[in-house]
Image (cartoon, rainbow, N blue to C red):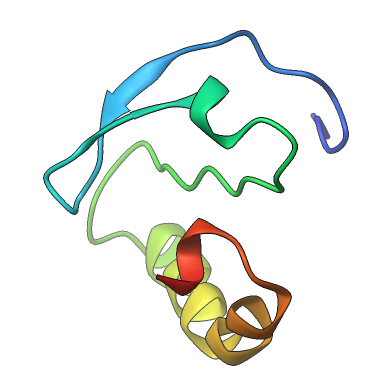
Length: 67
């Protein structure tokens, strides 16, 4: 299911940075929400490596992932 470009309902969650994040705090910004159902599986590893490989491009694009 492709949800790209769809509006999400507001939610909040704890980030790996130890901070609480609310979706509405990023209003008007592009948000990448990365989650996976199970650690240490080929799928989650491949996806995480994809983000790693795109890190410089994402950083240039700006947004909360560049902090």
